[in-house]
Length: 185
Length: 185
Image (cartoon, rainbow over all chains, first blue to last red):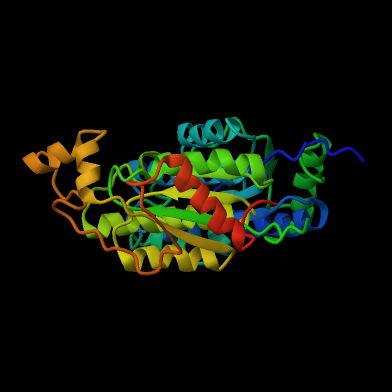
């Protein structure tokens, strides 16, 4: 079987609201990739990234942009190593996501996955209790409640994580990436 | 020939004063590694790192520490990909360098290279004109002039870049790393 990806690096960037299921999906995809792809896989999770890269930053537009740029830089370095970076970050602004894409595409491949779970569903789940805090005003600048989320127009893959299971959503991503030879070598 | 490094990742961290020759040496080693080692090599240069990771930070102890921690995190991710990270950063504080080491050693190998060029030599060269600015007070908190540099007690390799050429210093590092099977596979 021919390795269509040629051993090139790849970043899969999951964007979406808090509680949309980005991390869960990235973790499931990580497990699958470890089974079907020889390249090293690095999961860059939003909360961990904040702790390592931006413990000093808040959630203003400028601070969010600065953080997402750092995530993009880290992902581009992993991609340049011929590995696979899975990023899970809200990344609410279009122009900043495109900056991350451009940086990664200078050294490899970038795919944007929009985890398009509706806010009503995210809020109903409210796994971390953050929506409740945002509604009560305890948390300010909360994406989808008191801060904007710009829906991506450039997502290669859109996942509706409401109507499908994690396994189904993961299989969808695997099929779409596999169809163009980007994974499975 | 047996690949003694087992394909494991490696970070080589160059610390030293401004103008000590860290970047020049890292670039020379990068060229050598590309000739003798199959792993991807990523050069993380101080100035570029500042631009990508910490454009918002100054040079207080807290800000320097935060920056060096980010560099350590980035290096650990590259190391985890089974690649080689060459970091060139002043990194003046012992405890922060040791933090970077610990993070990298959780996923691979870390070697500290102290580029121990005496300050008189760095200042005489003054390639970027920074020492002149530091002496005149135009630049504050300048390492070696108005800010501390803690000489490492844990450097595996010490390079005296005054008495040797770049080629000789590079050959010294190559020989020391090669002797323990860390490079050349």
